[in-house]
Amino acid sequence: MPNMSVKRNIMPTQDPNVRNKNFDEVALGYSPEQAIDEARRCLNCKHKPCVGGCPVKIYIPDFIAKVAEGDFEGAYEIIAKSSSLPAVCGRVCPQENQCEGKCVRGIKGEAVAIGRLERFVADYHNQNGAKAVLKPVKNGHKVAVIGSGPSGLSCASVLAKKGYEVTIYEALHTAGGVLVYGIPEFRLPKDIVRKEIDGLKELGVDIQTNVVIGKTITVDELIGEYGYEAVFIGSGAGLPKFMGIPGENLKGVFSANEFLTRINLMKAYREDSDTPVLRAKKVAVVGGGNVAMDAARCAKRLGAEVYIVYRRGIEELPARHEEVDHAQEEGIVFKTLTNPVEILGYNNPQDRRDPKNMSVCGMKCVKMELGDPDESGRRSPHVKEGSEFVLDVDCVIMSLGTSPNPLIKSTTEGLDTQKWGGIIVNEDGLTSKAGVYAGGDAVTGAATVILAMGAGKTAAEAIDQYLQNK
Image (cartoon, rainbow, N blue to C red; front, top):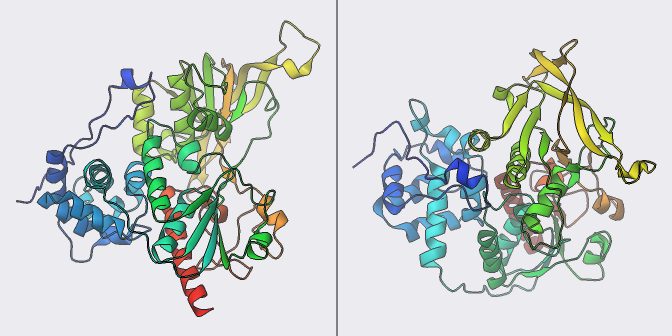
């Protein structure tokens, strides 16, 4: 019987005053009964607008219909035809702007909780239904994938299932890219990422870590000396941006990339960790995206009083509504319509002569007011005259976005890039260099996991066509 409730099933979560002191997953997941009840809210629309909103084109009404029947493994098989990382996407994709944003039920109520159902199905499969993977018959072709983030994993998965001999080259010591170094444990448990990567290994994908393409090996060497017939570049966008204001070189100033890598990949929040991280008393996180929310919530769990400093209003925050709500519930203070102009420092009392010992002791800010919309439609912020004040903090985390590392471009002959560093590709992900494809943040700049996966999948199909025709 259909469920015509205008409200979706609430996702069970840890209590905010408990979870802001631990790194356990915040969302606890649907029970089978909740999942079935939520699935019955789907109208199975004739034109299936939700599918059009999904970058990897999951057959959403079909898998939801299986959930409504209680056939959770059947639902997983449908999702797996399109998505290489369902347990990941169910947790971190911005469904409200994609599949759920197109849901007809959202017109007069709340959209069907597609992401929560995808997460439930993937978790059920991992706990109950995982079967031995049959390795495809090799077709004799070799492809190299640079980067083990979402686009690289997606590309490798599609190609491996088609019989290609795929090798992933990862610069860090652990595979997973942004999924392991960028997204905190409380949003995406790393055991889930490891399971997805183990599934790729079972398909025959070889993963080589601690290999920096452009330093250890170049793209040209992969094609020449190593004999790869095609290369996919999914190296992400790991080069952090800063404001260029005085004091950004002080002790206690981090990029969000560095801070989150120390926390997520190196487990610096543990007392027995070999990697240190500043356990500050008062932290300002500058920025308003999902990465800023992640950094702020990590700092809170380390015991700090935390501020989000953002130059526009709360309504203009680019982060997911759910992440903003969770941050507010956990006690993070939002200083909106506020912009830093200088980070203040003091000398270490033990050696006042050495400027390298300067540490953060505050952040000078100005209040902002919103004017007319800019070219993107967002209202432009302007400084409010006479509004300068000092925010009392001893740590500042800059979360202003990232751009692709120029290393691959500088070491690859004939690879065209944008002025800001993004690799130029056509609609199939083909670069200006024959046999070399690219996708994800290395092309678009920092974006979402699912968009990167979609780009990896598109490029894999194009690589298959290229090598078959070749």
